Structures are given as structure tokens and as C-alpha cells.
Length: 441
View 1: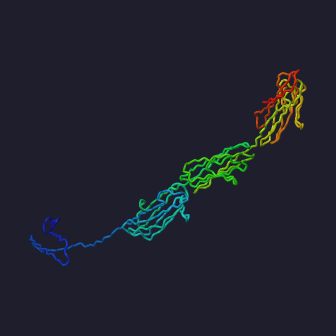
View 2 (view 1 turned 180 degrees about the horizontal axis):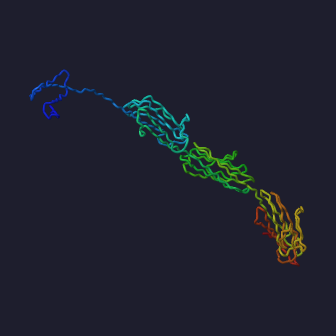
View 3 (view 1 turned 135 degrees about the horizontal axis):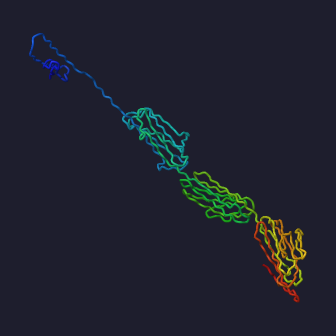
């Protein structure tokens, strides 16, 4: 081909050929024919130019890291206190080697390794294409309830970080039983009464409680009324024991028993519960056992039949069969209208009495009562003791035909009164008092 000279707008002033490739040792002949158009010398020159170069190929490789973690137990749950094993493997899934591979593992607070460390690092010199490195299992102990994790991350200066592949987190749920115990007991009781106790056991944890033992130690002065069903009782140690194979989560179980309070004082009762994998729970309650005064009253009259103007003595026997002293006893005697009190007191003459001037009222310490009353106010009557009072009376008239003495007793432990009555039959004038009768309340 040729090209026209752009300056002179003429043809053949500059010719240009493109040969392309000229093999080694080859030649190419170009013939140019020209027609002179004017006179004079003319220079003809041929210039040959060519390009030379070279080419190289570089292969780019990309290593990739992939982390796999397998947790054992595979169920994803483990009982608190048991072992959890993490099996870690790292694979180079790329097409080039990875150098200076770092593998880091981090445990959550509820997992403990024997070294007490929570973060671990292992270095591998390199990891070839397609190579898998299995690490020694990471064995831990589950310490805390709830979800616990192990996170493993692999990295290399040759690898572009890829969290989805090079980081793996495994979660395991740590479950555990947890016992809650509450003992209920009365705050106070009287001696020789029966107190109701109850132990309430609850599993507030997330796993069944196994080999459960519920034990209560009875008070020293208490006496078990009856051995409860499914319980064992050791009289030597005063321990009451229930055994259960398993208590499910959220289960609530009551254990009731009764204790007879045999003496006064503070009764201390202790209850405790244990199970595999749990800590012992304990509850304690105190019951104040108070003595109780049991006052009994008996009023008698020995003659049973009297003539008008006859004399007899009503006997008032007051006893305390309880477990404490009876205090502030108030004794009141009501006489029927046909009787007149002439004297009153006790044999030991420890109770002071006075008789009104008209002979109708006898008082043991003044209480402001009416004419027909005999009142005694006694500070104390000790347990297992008694006091005997007497009221000497005279029959004033035949009517009513029954002459009576009604006695009422109050004390601090019994604000409501107890009473008893005895009577004597009155014989009208002209008849003989030869019949007897027992008249009581």
C-alpha cells in the first residue's frame, strides 16, 4: 500500500508498506516504478522500521480458611458440672498455601478449661491447598446455667478475612436442677398440743433433680405423732427422711408431719434437701411452746340435807393440772337467798377473808361484788398443786327448797370463767332431815 503526501497533495512522494511478520532468514523485495516530472537530481531513500517485545504469565493464587467445630454432647444440652468437648478442624479451601495460620478459641464465662484460661491460641506454620488440620479436642466443664459458647477464629496474613468461613461459634445449653425449700411451723403452741409442720420443696431449675433427699430434724422436746407415708424415721437421731428418685423442673412437693409439744420452751426444727448436682438447701423455724395452766374446779357439800337454821360448809377445791402456774385467780361464790355466809377461808389460813357486819358477804380481798358473793383473788396456783377453800353457811329459811352455792373461777390463761355448783336440800320446820341427795351442776 502507499500513502499520498499530505503536504504537496501529490502521489508517490511518500510510499509506505506494512509487511507484518518477516520470518528469520527471509527477505521481501519491493519494486517501485516512478515517472520523472521535472529535471534535476532526486534522492530516493527507503526506511525500514519494526517493533520488538516479550511476554510473561503470572498465576495468582488465593488461599481460604474454613473452621469447623463439633460439640459433644451433640444434643446441645449438658448438665451443670459435666464435661463439654469441642472438636476443632481448620481447612484451606483455597488454591494456594496459607502461611502462619493462627487459630484462636474463646470460651464464655460458664465454661472452664483445666488451665483456667478462657482464650487459647495455636499457630500453624502453613496450611497447604486442600489441607485439613484437626486440633486436639478442647475439653471444658460446664459451670453456669444457660447458653454457653465457644468461638473459634482462624486467620493468616495471606488470607482475606471472611467471617462466615473462618469464624465458627458453637452454643450449648447448660441445664441444672435447683432446689428451693421452705419449712412452715406455728409461731407458738401450748404444751401437750399437736403442731402441724410442712416442708415445701420446689425444683426451680431447668433439669430434673435426681436422688433427692428431704430430711428434717425434730425438736428435742417434740414427739412425732405418726410416721408419714413414704418416710423413714430414726428415733435415735430424731430425723425424718423422704427419698425421691427424681423431681421434675417446676414441680412442687409438700411433706407434712405433726409433732406433739411435750414441754415448754423454744422448739427448733430444721429441714434440708439435697440432690445430685445441687447444693444443699436448709430452712429452720422456731416455735415457742408455752405452758398452759389447766385449772379444774370442784364444789361439794357433805350433808346434802339441812333443817332451817342448820349449818354446813361448801368445799371449793381448785387444782392446776397444767404445765405452768395459774396466775391471778379470781374465785367468786354465789349463795342462794336462803343462805347466810358466816365464815370463809382455807385450812392453812393463808387466804385472808372478811365477813360483812350483816353476815351476808364474805370476801377474800375486796372486789366490790354484791352481798351474796364470796370473792377470792389468789396471785398464783403452781402446776400440780391445789387449794381448798371453804364457806360456812347457815340456812335462813325453807324457801327455796334447794340452797345452792355456785362458784366461778377466772385466771390469766382463761379469761372466760369456769364454774361449778353444789346444793343442799332444805327441810321445812316440823320435818326431820333424814334424807340425802346429791345436787350438782
